[in-house]
Amino acid sequence: MPEESMREAYGKTLVELGKTNPDIVVLDADLCASTMTKYFIQEFPERSFDVGIAEQNMIGIAAGLAASGKIPFASTFAVFAPGRCFDQIRMSIAQSELNVKLVVTHGGLSVGEDGTSHQAIEDLSLICSLPGFTVIVPADAVETAAAVKAAADLDGPCYIRLGRPKLPVVFDDNYRFVPGKAVAMRDGSDAAVIAIGIMVAPALDAAEMLAAEGIKCRVLNMSTLKPVDEAAILKAAETGAVVTAEEHLEHGGLGSTVARILSQKKPVPVEFVAIRDTYASSGKPAELLERFGLTAQDIAAAVRKVIKRKS
Image (cartoon, rainbow, N blue to C red; front, side):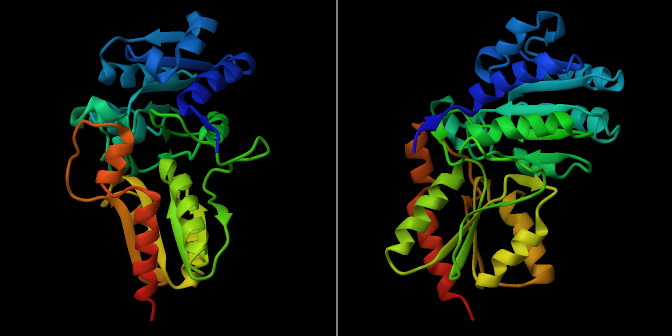
């Protein structure tokens, strides 16, 4: 599969939106060359605000702009928002129900050599705890562009999590993103893998590996983590075995959400491909993903294990 940058897709989509909607404004915290908001800043300098290394202040300004009728897109690294400015997001955006779009980059372990301090592996649990937020984790550049456009049309706070490296493109240009709806990537009756973000492509690879063993594995892209597609989760559970895959800590993200729904409405065996209760270290992205169990081989192993647990 060809690879493309989700960050590049975000930056270029902002420019498209800016040309058609004069209410869109963009904020950044001295990272525009990394978040790729630089494209919007170059095109619309009068609607761009670089607050410097002051993410908490950026949230307050974004809230003020939203309260004034603008549609602010505020960007930084995932480790800084919600990490550094959780209280400001909670008070100024969530509790006020303001129409702010937080689009963060460099999520998860795949920031690689930047090391532990810059690896956001808790962000989804933090942001999902806030009432009213729509939380989206796109699988590739195509879905990123579609999700950003959809977020601009949604009324209310949104959080979109993007990664640093280029990722395999799993969707074609005909793809249409619908907030709150999972996408069936592959059918199967023996087990289901529910994945988000950079784990969708490995989930598809794992399903292909398992097919060679005679195991039919369904794959779902659950790109909207909140509000989650409960109906799709329950349908996946009809296989009798579910695996979740995410570039995040095991607790508080996709796995916790899926387990909660299944425990209430359709209990089946579940296995989790995620980061266990630990922080990582500096290293090349591929090496870190392998070390912490976030590969296609790990997903395939989890599927084999959960199938053995089927009643």
